[in-house]
Image (cartoon, rainbow, N blue to C red; front, side, top):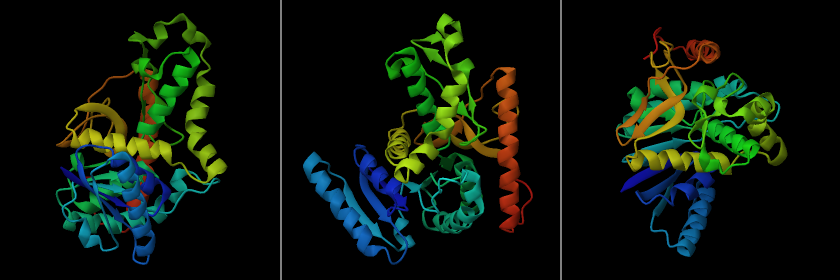
Length: 321
């Protein structure tokens, strides 16, 4: 039975993630962490969760704290803290502000909870995942980000709608940046086990329209209701369950890659990875030449921003871990 801590539990995503994670049978304790001064709010969230557990018969414990030392003993630390994205902002506009927050916490987490996995949710998630990896001192398989997992689910739903099939019949992925340079893998997309490009109706699929929807979905939700909540919350819970349940699923998350995708690497970015109780392991894949070129461009974009952020943070090391 595991302890899952949520750093940033006063935010909407952190709160809903806590509720979703509470449904995982392997979770013994959910710890809500917020900055000093947020204690009354944290207590209110904890009480509300406990009331919901009484209604659903959930047997998880809920604790709350503003003392980072209490993260000790965590199996998974979900990091949702940071400055939220405004409607007019790109995820990368947030990079420096959130990098300062993440780097400070990562150092402390590395010392306080050396055995914990870090699941990064804070945007821009690919860059923040790399910041957490470097400053925590953890191994690459112990730090990963939400990445393009939710984007892949959005594409899956859009394809299912276009082909009028149940969403479970669609298998697809998006790799690369969780952002504008994301890369849909049509070469790895199937419907009912059939390669999508082998279906005559594929020629009539509005690919550009679908990808515009996937890329802009988060921004549209933010503009409409202030923040994305339920999609990220459920996606976070899926990843936590996959690790704690030792499920060996292959999901698309932000992870540190070296040469798994056509020898492109040295960056944290969205890729298919095998996830189990030992951590997150990128899966070597081969994709079509146009997809390789797009992925290379996405990697270079994220690598350049990451290097700039590390330089500003006055990181003395020149090479990525």
